[in-house]
Length: 434
View 1 (cartoon, rainbow, N blue to C red):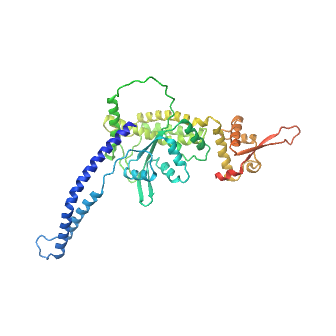
View 2 (cartoon, rainbow, N blue to C red):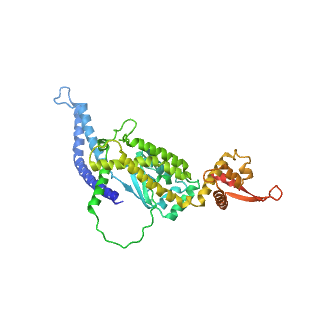
View 3 (cartoon, one colour):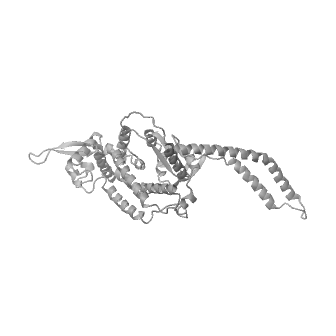
């Protein structure tokens, strides 16, 4: 976070200078204000009383220009410099909206412990706040924030990033709820850069001096990226804004584009074959992540070389894909805290049961499961993904019984000497989840 902290520190210093300059100019304007007002009154009086043959007469345009100059001076007094904000901490949605309104490039929210942040979005009555964060993920739309007693704020470019840490046990508890299918609105999948590193072995402490050259190089790169605006982006190869795109935009060059499309088609196939919908949804968001990373790497190359490189290059795309492969392995590890246990199988079955409850029954089965229950054998015949072997089916059934989604009864066989059959019945109270 130190490169971001460095940007924030420089922004605060620049803001202090801007405030001092504003106060200086305001003092000058204040000292001139009475003289300007008197001059305007004198001009207005002369315009109203002057004879037609007056030398150097005052015209209505003269009066208008003088009034406009005074108005502009007063507007400058009211135009207090706003600070450039790169990062915020724990903050209300209303205050965050104010900061976004003043910072059109978006803002990063840093939370050292994300569990509190996620819990705040899960609270009853916080649906608007949750939607605000979900919508800020794309970074291309606008938003309106209504503030009690202080009017509304329009955010032209609603762009939010969130970074922080989460302890494994708290992560598992949060994901367990999400993967049951009752709270999955895509929030977790928006943490595209999440990693789950191995524990670091305790080592002997060494007092090593900071590599100032490397640190300064990184700081300089961040500052250069922070100062990229329309002219500089176009100079590096971006297309200029137009009626369809309000900001400069890049395209892949002719070498990178076919490679990206091939990768993207493979991504779609991988997502279709994923074991759980949460993983599918996460993978599909890589279709946006990889081009974003490729663009960042491309701009780094442009800054380092100091000249136009055109469209996003194949080298930048390959670097982004390599990053994506690494992030995918971490993503699977994150979700494995529950995908490798019984709750995955239970969530797969619970989703099917909820669909059935919504429809009022399973119309494809000879027996209405909602009214008459079902057997493990009839469940296996469905051949649903992730529920097509005896162990997976029994695991899912056992978990849903534990959570009162199902209950079961042993039904005596109608044949002579036949074994009793276990029949599972769906809890009718599940309708409250719909």
